[in-house]
Each structure stands twice: as structure tokens, then as C-alpha cells.
Image (cartoon, rainbow, N blue to C red; front, side):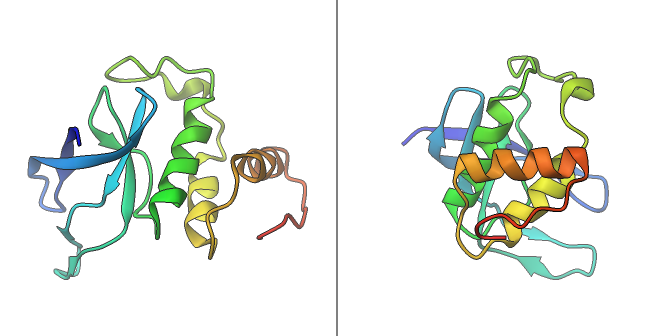
Length: 135
């Protein structure tokens, strides 16, 4: 399996590079087991999965419960009109709902389909209150 180099920024401000085994990639993003880290309370956090923007090595997802959660969020991002080949993408074109959608995906007991994620993104973007399957 190929590996990806991740940029880890610690709460102290120190940056570190670590490698992770790629589980899925579309060339723009990759999913992998989330690296262990020490949170601001000094507790070591392990487990879960993450999605990383390949060109920058920066995480684009919270630690997700399954690889499928991380993958569907990365697939949604990949479909946005943004130059993901850039080391520092222009996020002005990325929907403002990104943070809320990322948290919504993370909290689903089962990874939603890409279609359900797209519908939820529209709901969050336009302020409609809609009960979606799996919500």
C-alpha cells in the first residue's frame, strides 16, 4: 500500500511530519487511519480515520469513526469547484457549510451515501430544515 506524508500541528505550535498508509485515494484526497495525538488536555487520542488533502498534507476531516465516513466527506470535497492540485487551495469557492457538514458526517452512526451528503450540504447552505435519511 502507498503511504502519505501528513503535517501534524501540536497544541504547542510544533509541527511534525508523519507517514500513514493510504486506504483510498482519488488523487486529490486520501483516507488513512488517524495518527495518534495529544489533545489540549494532555490526553493521547488514538483510533478513527481521517481524510487528507494530498497536495498540502493537511487533514480535511475530523477524526471519523470509520474509513467510509472519511471517504464520503473527501468525495464530497473532491467534487467541489476548487483547484485541489494547489498546495494552498483557494477556499473562497468552498461552501460555508463545510465545518457543519464535516461534523454532521462524523456524528452519523453509519456512513451516509454521497447523495445524502450532497443533500445535507444543500440543506446547510440554504438554511432549510429537512429531515434526511440517517439524520
